[in-house]
Length: 163
Image 1 (spheres, helix red, strand yellow):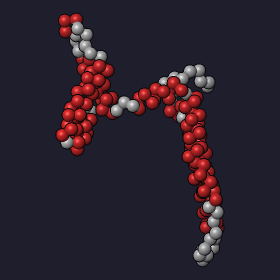
Image 2 (cartoon, rainbow, N blue to C red; image 1 turned 90 degrees about the vertical axis):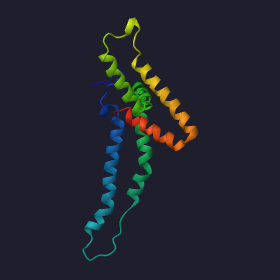
Image 3 (cartoon, rainbow, N blue to C red; image 1 turned 180 degrees about the vertical axis):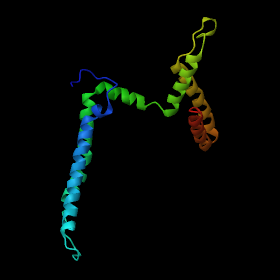
Image 4 (cartoon, rainbow, N blue to C red; image 1 turned 60 degrees about the vertical axis):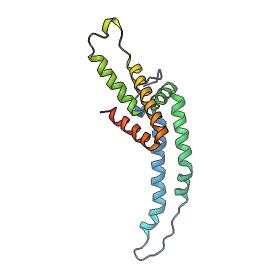
């Protein structure tokens, strides 16, 4: 199977193939390092108190793991730039905002007719933006008087918007 475009509906295993490969390589390296430590212990006689083991493979894995994973992640990102851009944009949206969008979509789908006197209904994005602006104003006003209460208000708003 060949890749023809940067489709946004790629399965995660394909989109992150190089990262998954790097992780499986690290799993194998960890298994080998553990074998280097525990094989001598397993081979030692039951009465032997001190067993010399080789910790170098453990050290090597620990030193190269982060850079190996970073390199794999960068290669996957270079391979699928459109998907990466979309994922970054999506990650900026908060859970509460996503819930607000879903709630607004439910409301607009139920609206019949779509607007009173020919005035179109707000889009889902406009409704969510209006909710966020009014919430921001309320939090900012509370912040001046009592920052802890403002934080509690943000948590309350996040929970209530998803119910």
